[in-house]
Image (tube, rainbow, N blue to C red; front, side, top):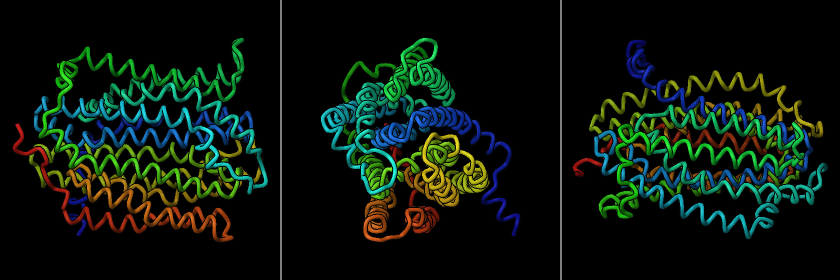
Length: 466
C-alpha cells in the first residue's frame, strides 16, 4: 500500500530538485515582492485608517488590472510553453508577439477607465454602515493614490509579456533578479517619500504610489534589456519586432484555446473585486480589516501560487514533447507536494497572524476583526492550494473551456451571489460571512479532483505544427 502511494505521489530527489529549481526563484521573487508590499502596507497603515483604506481600495482595482494582464499573457502562454517544449522558437515568437498586442490593449483600456471613472470606482467600496472611519477622506486619499499609480500601468503590462515568456522557457532567475531590484527600490523609496526622510517632503499616500511606479519601470527595463541582449537564451526574440504579423494558424489556435483562458482570468479577477465589495457593504471597518488580513495572506499564499505556476511549466513542456504519461505522473506528485507544503504553511500563518494586526495604527476593533480573517484564510489555504493546482493542470493541456467553467463561472454563479446575499440580506456577523464564503472552496476542490483524475487535460495542442 505504502509503496503504491509513494510511487504515485512522492518523487525522487531529481524530481524535487527540478521542481525547486523552477519554483524557488519565483517564490523568492514573489516573497520579496509580497514582503515589500507588506512593509508598504504597514507604512501607509501608520498614517491612519482613511489613508490605509483609500490605498487598499485602489490596490483592489489595480489587482483586477494585474489579473487582466495575467489572463492576456496566459492565453498565449499555453502555446508558448508547448512550442518551447517542442523546440519551435518561431511559434514561440508569434505567441510572444500576441502577448505584446493584448497587453497594450488592456493597458490602454485601463488608463481610460481609471482616468475618467476614478471616483465612481472607488465609491463602490465606500459605505458609512460601519462605526469607524471617514469615507470622504478615504475617497480623497484613494483618488490621490490612483492618479499616480496609472503611470505605472503600461510598463507593468509590457514587462509581463517578457517576464511570462522568460519563465515559460524555464529561466526563472532573471525575473527573480528584476523583481528583487524593483522591490528593494520600492521599499527604500516608500520610507523616503511616505514619511519624508533625509530631508525629502513627506508625501504620504502619493509618495507610496511614486515609489511603486518607479519600481515598475526598473523591473521593466531590466527584463527587456536582458532579453534583447541574450538572444541565445531567448531565440524567440530575434526578429520579434521585424514584423507585426502572426500566422493565421497560430492566431486561430490562441484565440480558440486562449480566449476562454483570457476571459476566465478577467472575470475571475472582477469577481474577486465584487466579493470584496460585498464585504465592504458592512462599512469602512471591514475594508480596513480585510486589507490587513489580505496583506499577510498574500505573503503566505505565494508558495501554492508559484507551485501552481510550476505545474503549467513542467506539465506544459512534457505535453508539448508528447510525454503524456510522464506529464500525469509529474502532475500527481506536484499537487501532493503543494498541498502538503501549504498545510504546514497555514499553521505557521495562524501563529504569526495573531501578532500582525497590532503593528497598525488603527482602531482595536479593526485589529481584532483582521485577526479573525487571518485565521479563516489560513484554514482555507490547503483547499485553495489543491484547486489552484487543478486549475493549472487543466490549463496546461489547453482545456480552457473547462477552466473557464471551473474558475470564473463557478465564482460568478455560486460564490458572488452567496457573498452578496449573506452580506446584504442577513444579520450574520461579518466574520461568519467571511468564513462561509471562503469555504465554498470545498465544492471547487471536489470538482477539480474529478476533472484532474479523468485525464481530460492530457493532450498535445501543438502536435503536427511546423
